[in-house]
Length: 110
Ligand SMILES: [Zn+2]
Image (cartoon, rainbow, N blue to C red; front, side, top):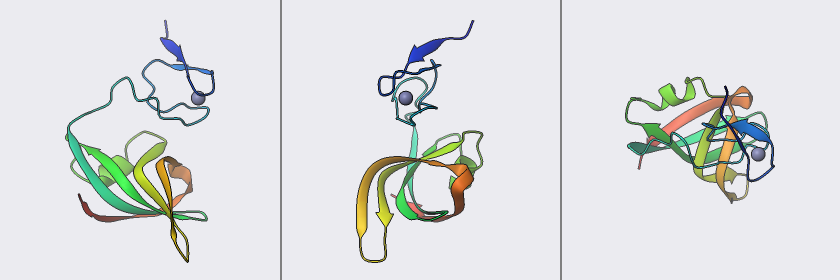
């Protein structure tokens, strides 16, 4: 039997182990969150926007590219900012669908 729980944000039923809701993309912050790892600063270009933020690289993954190439559909950016021509807009936490990413540039570890 599948284990399910209810998303506290959109009330849809989702997999118990989900960290990001598949319906509303909220970060649920439970389940198998890995604690050991490093934050890597990256710049991400999507279809129409550029974001800067930190990606969590778990200890068992060696590089940012491992996170980008893993099986999850989203990259979670922490301390995310949207870069516009004139300024940076703070967003906070952002889940970006990998399908819309054009490129990811690694800036460095924090
Ligand atoms: Zn939800």
